[in-house]
Length: 97
Image (tube, rainbow, N blue to C red; front, side, top):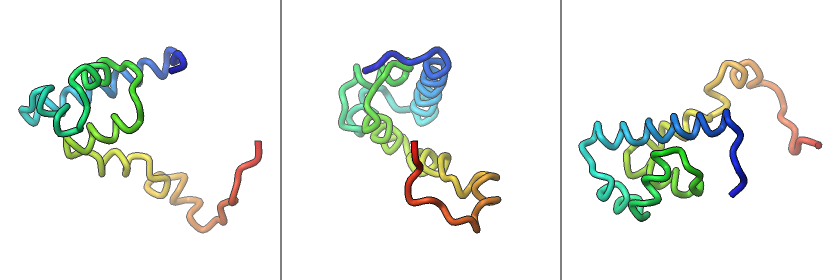
């Protein structure tokens, strides 16, 4: 995987801390979450430390913790001020480079 820039690494570390906190709030061990997410414990530990993992891992762990819907909703553009402001606009089929 490519090296993350500093800002992305900080966000990944913060995201990992949030995942670990959810796990602890739910009184789940790393083994339990890993089993529910169908990953190994080392992969979960990498996610919790902010190390790069696959997007499928992020989604599987979020599902195992019961926060998948909230994660998906967090990036819903229609729930943002910008999305609501432009709700009536016609979106382009493609964005040119």
